[in-house]
Length: 172
Image 1 (cartoon, rainbow, N blue to C red):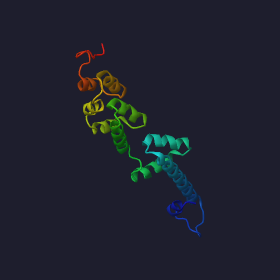
Image 2: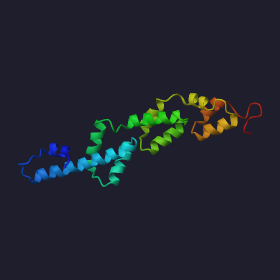
Image 3: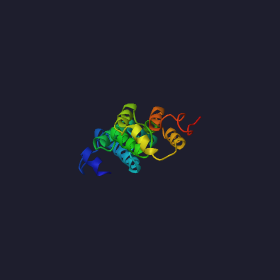
């Protein structure tokens, strides 16, 4: 029996196990199992609340225990979707991804649209990142790279200029 469950239920040697205490004990054991499963899931990397809920459900955790575990971990700072979104957006931006690609990636990780938008708003402007990413590349290569990396067409054009104009390096 986990120590935390013993303490929360007020168990002691001479305490008779009646129905209310048995229910409380069962509830606390479910909660403890849910917290343990959530912590194991978070060991590899942070997860959004939605993804963590999916993992707990797949392990057969009841919704009341799931809610209690997520509340415990949120209070402790282990589950924070806004912070997760900011950190992931920054990491993706530093690896050369544009705002559209970052948005798609974060939403696929179970983060909500408002959290994703707020995280992207905290990033260095996309145009500055695009210019730095293609510094020294030929125009055709730079254009293709920025497109593949999810940069906005207007950002690409402002970073590289119009490829159809120029000294024979255009796409057409």
